[in-house]
Image (cartoon, rainbow, N blue to C red):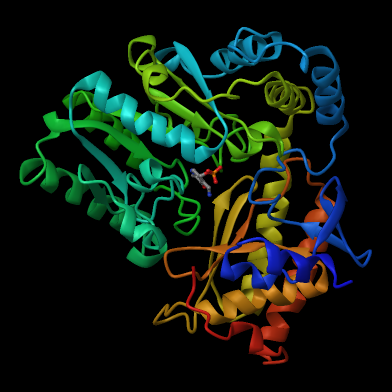
Length: 437
Ligand code: PMP
């Protein structure tokens, strides 16, 4: 019998770039996964951020076990079940006053953003939506429709306008990036996009899939002022960088803004499928008419999410993200001093990016070397992935429970992987037909 990886390739449709992880995973504990040959893999991706507490966390296992035995026979007819109500109340207590109205539950970041996109248009009567170039808000038709990542070019909605996310590295400085992005927004409002037609601005407080871009100081405050002036709702997509990952519970807190609507996903369920939208009652009341889904608000996933939130709070995991993220960041800065491939190290807390370039003057993206680094790191026992509109940014989003020893262990493997890639020691057959994301 062939191995699981071969059988998966023959039976399940999966993305071509997953070729860089050519092995099946059979288990996991904490920050480590176990491959089907018994190898331990340090998971610096936390399975794209879903495994917020790491793998097989006892709090999630207990909560799910309990919910399965208490609730599985009960009706899923509505969200009037204990785990859901407790989760809703908890989430409402964790957002600013402005957004503290009602919750809608979904299964993924995609369905949550799609629901918001339809809801804000219905609630405001305004047909247009603003989002950032490079933003990934999901893979369903409606969420692709408000996304700006190049991989989603085919799916943009008619009412969507994209504006540049400030890229401090590309622009040369945070100030230059901020000024250019704000000037573009103001120009748009003064010319082809009447702000009174815009229902909402979807923001990523750190743009993750677009390249782990950190907003320059003051940028989102200025965006907030413009939105308030024109009555545009601010939607903070916290799906990847929220829930403690940035070092604060909500990543938008880093910019000192108060969004109207907040979207949670990925790590909320700690691996189980659940997402949530929080916003003012008058807007949220438009959600249900559009998005009734059979098992949304099911008590099993809600119980897992509640356990995640309680564990983040009890174990001070946002503080851990800040502290351990700091150690990780310092180790990466030391790597940058030795590896010419590294053009920039950036991010906040445990949401970090390492941009690889062919040379530091031209800053030409080193996309092939990035994919090879991911592949080599996997061979050496480290799981991480790449993001960026040019597929040249290594993304580090490890579990919030990461220890400093694990942070150093991961960086040591990355060090070796980068050295092997730079020395051309890797068989690059894996790159056949590779065209980035
Ligand atoms: N928003 C952001 C910021 C994301 O990073 C992602 C996934 N990469 C999504 C939404 C979509 O979430 P999901 O894959 O759970 O549908």
